[in-house]
Length: 92
Image 1: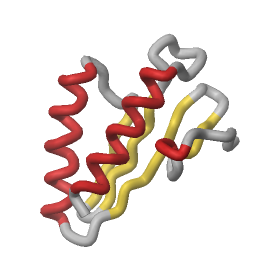
Image 2: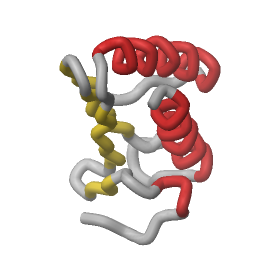
Image 3: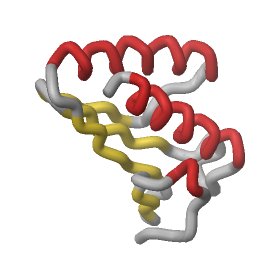
Image 4: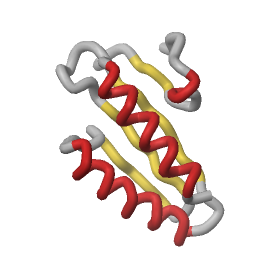
């Protein structure tokens, strides 16, 4: 189910059960996919948190985030998602 989200979270899909944010990032070349995954790893260390699930192929990465408290998305969760989106934009 989608809810109103800030402009920073455009492209993310909010789901209800369990509460998650999901987004698929597409790239033109594998090198871009790999660079995004490497940058995501650094960002996760910076935020001291990791996506609940990451799956990827040659030219895409699927990212699923859970709320920090497992119940409700807070501003730090949305900031984390927005920063992930910004990484993808840098790599294109």
